[in-house]
Length: 260
Image 1 (cartoon, rainbow, N blue to C red):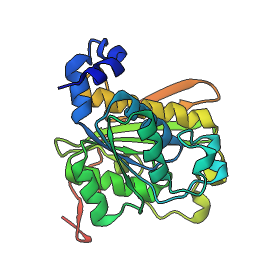
Image 2: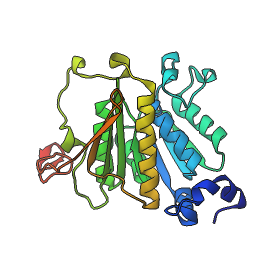
Image 3: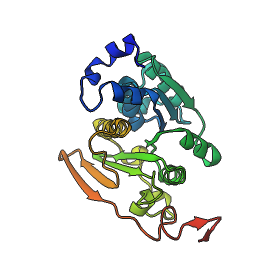
Image 4: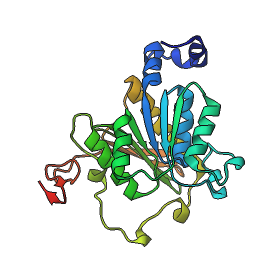
């Protein structure tokens, strides 16, 4: 049941027909895992906390640097040098103390990643590297969880959503098959730069997708790849097809290092 305080706080959201009291209760009961507390995670964390998502787990092992503040709007100067996940929880608590927050300050890998994914209703990938994206994709597929993935660099942003509930693809690896990448191939905000509002756009769209998925409203865009061009202010979408040879979701998945 929603309390009187919650009815007041979320009154404008409760007025939305596709949410109403039932949807707000669903948000309150939900647990969302945010992997990465940078620019994308800032927008996702702020909007999900404000929306009343009952439990938010946020994972990041980095410390906040001055160069992060240009786009990671969840933080303040006083957070410099602090672990991002801990600082994120403090800021989200200051915004909305009705929710519960938990910080994971170590890099999520292996069994710990699998356990955190298993506990979540939805996973939001806000990481900034391919190794983490592939690992999160695999963990979500194995746990049959919904995954909302985002990325941004320069003026460009990407949004991808997968629903692995029925145990079939496509998955992130179908879109971008994992391969050996040299150091020069890898681009991120540190090497390629980023326009702050671009991560805000993608992170906000990730948060919107999470809310729609929880309350089962509208179109989330599962199996759809959306590309945002911030310079031109345009979106492009394409459907993602499953790859039957995908080593994660295909008919020839790798098991213990060998093909089935």
